Length: 578
Ligand code: ASP
Image (cartoon, helix red, strand yellow):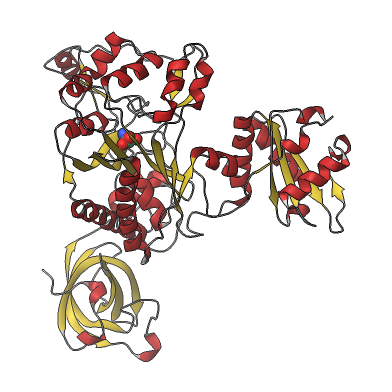
């Protein structure tokens, strides 16, 4: 239908007769007989001069034929790539009319997100969504190229499966042929990719859709896409090298330059320096350990196992209101309190608790934090975990740059603990999934845990996370490939032999027939794309997302099903719980 795309026309085309197709972005009258129409397609906009008599409104779909000519100098639009030319005396064919749209599609108007999602087909016409989806496709293609080049085989794993233990709630699908039985939608292809390794695939990948029934957030949707991969006969280092290559190619495509090699940091170091297992290393404001300085203190609030502080350069001006707000926040994060100490312009120290500290303690903390005149220091005294957690959040609150500033800082966090907690029933809670291999040197601790379960918290795992600007992009690990160690972990987790056989028997059985040592990883493509294009919310890089409440304002899913369908599935609904 067309000879050219709107946005690709240029002064080189002057004199050519062209036909372009697209949507009316704007119409302006031009004297008595003519009108300017800005026609938009996926490549951009071209101005067309058309006969005034045409009844053309915004978002009409047109085919416009005319000759490209130079614009008079005073009407050149330098903001538009095609701003020096126009299609003169064009003939117009209206291909489709359009009602007035519920929101404006050009310019930077804030539109309620539910309205945008309800009319996503209109929202997709905006520059922002066009750019985001195009970037997403380019990133997917770059990842595929990187994986193909490294000899990975793309394998599609099933969507209707038994449960996967990623720790979230499953979405379930009733089985018509097996009434009373349910499939789960995959939370990840974890077990299948491990089976692929037993099956000799050696290098597997998939751009996989995963489903987890968790509360939605800015960086979380029910369904998401991840690069899922697994390799045989490798250690974690080799997995990280492959993944680094894939994300580097994706990042280079969008930013135009190759990111430098991704640094690695142990989980313990990340927690100590940044108070987070996904540190945003775009900025410093690091946590400093002050425990030693207060080892003999008389200040009751500081008789704690751990004291940490941060220093904000030039923060001495912070007013009382703001300090009260920060203290309240720290309490909601679990702190008993937040201590602040200001160093005045001539070195004098002020703090509501200065009178409880000795001169040596004050001098010591100022020295350790490197505080100078005009600075403020914040201190938290608590158990180690809570102290670093609270200061880590305070660090973000005080220093985190906006999503589109500060460049792209990838980081590998390695040596995660195997368990993150011991639950009330005395069972350890796995930090990753239960197929993660412990550090071989720490296997003894597993054996010793019978007497003292708390030693389990010291067991390191061979698990690693990839972090970008403070967002967790994904996780992976070296897997357990021995039935004995796997059963030992299941036992510790309180998953008995019967339950493990019922849930993961197929994997344990597969391991009877020669399981290669293997390791893998998965990272969220929605999150990677969002960060690379500078969006705070992954919904902006998903064509048809769910709203915050988990519903789809466009199709109105989820919807009730009729009673015939329920009967067929052998289901009866209970009255809604109040
Ligand atoms: N299955 C894990 C996940 O989806 C990733 C992995 O361990 O490879 O988070």
